[in-house]
Image (tube, rainbow, N blue to C red; front, side, top):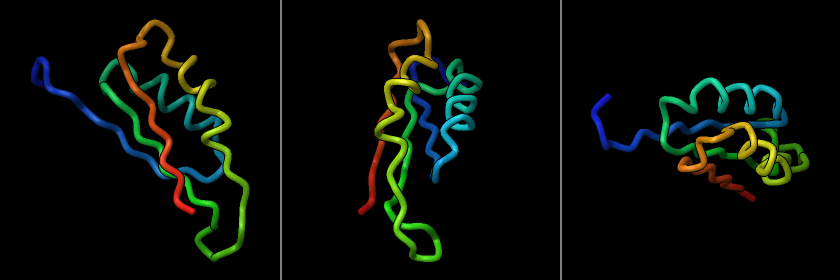
Length: 77
């Protein structure tokens, strides 16, 4: 990894917030930002509740002391 170069992790989520938190904890030393994409529809077109925005504080807490990283939640409605 080149010094000073930003690294971005992007992930599509449904409702697996525990796995997302684990992913962020595991990859926090490597990536400088995390993009979390979530839709209000399932792949089959059924409506579903949005979970990632509500869990954003939990994900930021997963970073611990690495507060320089950013977690952005993108909702597609």
